[in-house]
Amino acid sequence: MRKCLTLFLIPFCLTAFSQDIQEYISKNAKEIDAAAKGFKGFNFLDTVLKNKRIVLLGESSHGTEEYSKTKLQLIEYLHHRLGFNVILFESPMTPGTYLNLSMDTIAADSLIRYAIQSIWHTNTVLQLFNFIKENKLYFGGFDPQFISSPYSNRLFSYAFSNYPGIKKELMQLENRIDQVFKQGIYTKLKDSISFAYSRLATEMEKQHLSPLQKWIEHMVTINIHYYANLYKGNQRDSCMADNLVWLAEKIYPSEKIIVWAHNSHIDKNASSSSKFMGKILSEYFGTQLYAVGLYMVNGSTALNNRDIIQVKEPAKNSLESLLSNRGFKTAFIETNDQSFDKKIKTFHWGKDVQKLNLARSYDAVILINGVSPPAYLKSK
Image 1 (cartoon, rainbow, N blue to C red):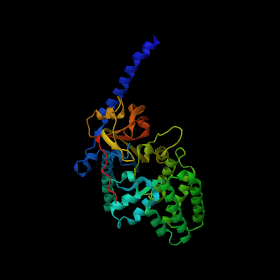
Image 2 (image 1 turned 60 degrees about the horizontal axis):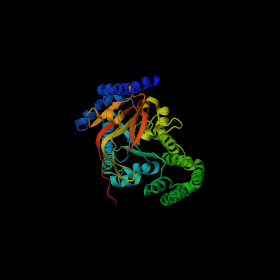
Image 3 (image 1 turned 180 degrees about the horizontal axis):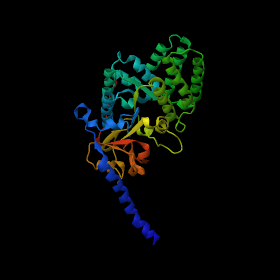
Image 4 (image 1 turned 30 degrees about the horizontal axis):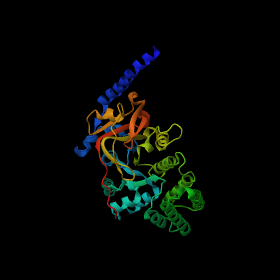
């Protein structure tokens, strides 16, 4: 009898689960009308974001054109209407620092190629960099991961002209990591790299450093821990969170900040066993922080290696299926409601099923119906 009753209750529970969220979505989902002039399509965000200092813009895949377009439009809105002047990318700190020094003298496509990860070397991100240049916004990276770029050594040469010994050590270490990076032997040499950064940090502590030099000193200090624990648990996320807190508190203490990263990094509830970036930032900044996860349905996306895949058809009662039922091209909904305070299926990278408590992971989600891979910049 108990078994029969349990079997009878299962479909009832699923129906109640779906209806609960569907009712909330029906009343509260809003369509982002990006074509509306003067940012009128974003008017509903004025009250939502007016008291927020840091807005995290995620994405479930790095290779989705419509994500970048939507985030570009949001950035334009956030700058012009709400006074956000800083954009921080999931890319290395040092090349991004140099970009601020060379914004007026280097073309936007060159800035993209050498300041951020190649996954975002796209025509739409080029538009973003032109927007940054035209409006004289601040740009930065917060990721300890390495990319091969001439900007790092240019920064070291400029910043430490009065400390030639430190400049030489920084540049030699940068060149060494570049070779290690190209050969794929990071793990073998991670301890020696960490030791080299530790020695540099000791030298820097003895000097009276300028603000720019202190910026590089912070990068050096973070890299000690990053390389010592390379590929261990949430080490990268922990370093990214440290970098973002430092940038927000030391470099841009009076500015509003936009963060561009993957959904996994901005998730405020990610992993019960270890703290990822979004969770650390949420605990530090509290209600000043607002995290928006971006999801997709219907179409295709590119993986990090630029292979194109079809976005899988969403499962029943998943976020994608429930929100796409509204018929919006781009739907926005806040998740701070009890109907979202439960595990809900979503798609990671458009192909892998995840179960997330969206009320705890994000403050809002955006679903884009109909997606495609980006147009990448042509190789030089």
